[in-house]
Length: 518
Image 1: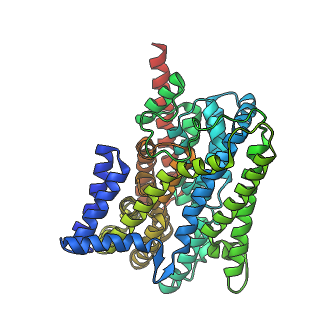
Image 2 (image 1 turned 135 degrees about the vertical axis):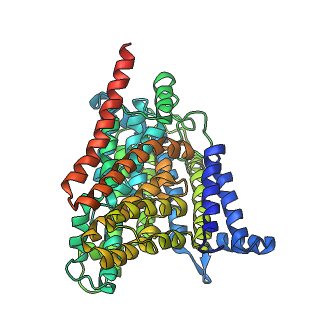
Image 3 (image 1 turned 90 degrees about the vertical axis):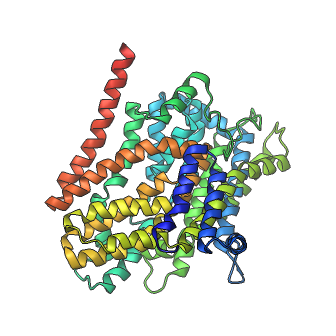
């Protein structure tokens, strides 16, 4: 079954079940069981052992603790505790009161959240969770649905980090390109130079970022998002009926302290940002070999350890504010327990997503999809388009952008080096763009899970409401890659891609306004 068309079955089955049942845990669990059965050719006992081993390896691998996973899960618990302290202290409410006096409209609140996502470009995990903590008090006060906030966060996390050379993603991609160029004898480009030149070719990422601001200002609420936004505005219900698997929501647990001040929210978050970024710089510098630069630091940084350190320091800060605050009716133990409790749904989903990712890796689903590209003999003009589509399907099926980069970028360089070197940068950029597109569409992506966690949204609601926007940007990007393949230009396909997205947004706004008048 490995490396064949049958390896697609668990991923496809999982996605179908998600759409039909909207139960992410059931869907992931079914995909895991079916995948394990396929790996062991329907030997049930061996499949059960495979599942046990995969769960065990999340925490212990090669007789050593899997520190990275443990630190990330610990950070989620710390984030839940910090969120609980911010809510109980009244800091979140005070910040919401302060911001609502300055940001007068729902559009402004959405644009401010998107701007935060663009500014915090260091790492996608950090972006997803930090932006949610800062923006949620503001968007809640303007009755913006949590699904809309999750979309804003998700579409300004991976799309921003994938075009930023000074980020964990940028450093990873540049590092991969160095080895690939050396292996294929590409001497005309340096990896950093190539990465920067690829930015304008990353049509999907740029389109996704533009779409967020169009959604904010033109009220482009597509498909299920319209339901969530209408309900939020009319009833004040920001989450909706699907309150299962919602992480980080404490709106009904604590009565905010009346003496809460803005600094009760902003100082712990500032400490989180400063401590995390500082830890990333320190761990990256310590691990770097040879000359130390910004790129080598971010290429070697320990993101999960840095998040844990930042989270721990932020929790201590918020706790100190709590014990010094007058009129505090919520006990410390209750705050800690309730904070950890809110993060359990995210942890359950993340654990299952990791396991099915490993199962799909064992089935070599990614290698099968990559082989389709490697064995094709199409016109080189179709290569950027083809790489975009295949990378999208691979990330959708496997739930990992980084894994897709690692598999598809070498193939893109190898194929274009043989067929048409002019397609090198567009094809590599298409791989990056397709991987982010697939990442936006799958419920098993870490970034997607953490975006719904940061926003306090139902995970499947987030996936379903984001799909129309992801598909719009993907269709526009696909047209752009076809144009670039046949013309070799960059400005024209970029303009066409943006024109499709902007034109659709304006048309949608016009039709909506016209309908409202009648």
